[in-house]
Length: 165
Image (cartoon, rainbow, N blue to C red; front, side, top):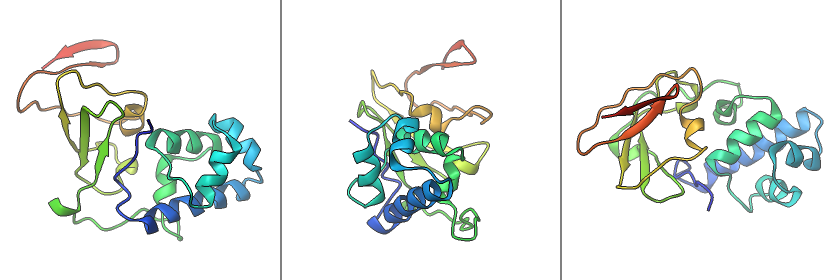
């Protein structure tokens, strides 16, 4: 099961990302086959993304960004290359990321999360919930972590140190 981003509230936003994938691939003079091999997926999947048949998962956006030698946040920049500048984020506009095990979900507390050093999230982790490699995209190397446990207990690792809160 792919980690689908509820980050994309409507098809228009997804389509912008899909067009950006094609645009970046063509600008780098890459074939669909070359991009697929670098991203570790099939040619048909890349074709489906570019043609609006399939939506990318968070982990796939990370793999595509790496294959295209860009930052994940570059997929979210406007036509002028600027990050979104809308700073107001109401509770009703928060976007939710659901993890594959369906026991973890995170609400984004800021826009343009991939361009932030500290990435504020509210996460709900049910007993037995865990993150996978997709969590590395939300918490890339060099980002800052702030963890506040409101209820229960959580075990996690930072720099190979085991921490229980």
